[in-house]
Image: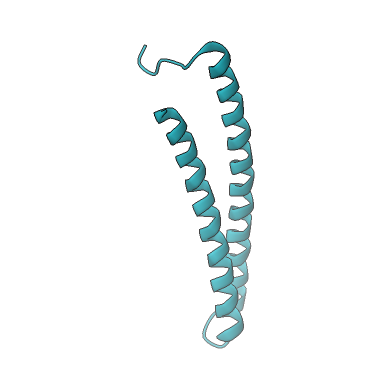
Length: 86
């Protein structure tokens, strides 16, 4: 049971991080568009690109984690749960 909670918890952290990246992209875009004389447009674009790439990487990590989690679940059903303290 605890193992299942940890798996779901890790997925939540990935989802939260993806959401934070998306929020930063929106915030930086707003700053760039509303205050072009106060912020460096070039620097904002660089940061937007960085957060966009990070969000895409987190999305792929999340998908890989789901696939890995399914593989582990099938293995545990077949062989029984692993003993974390042998």
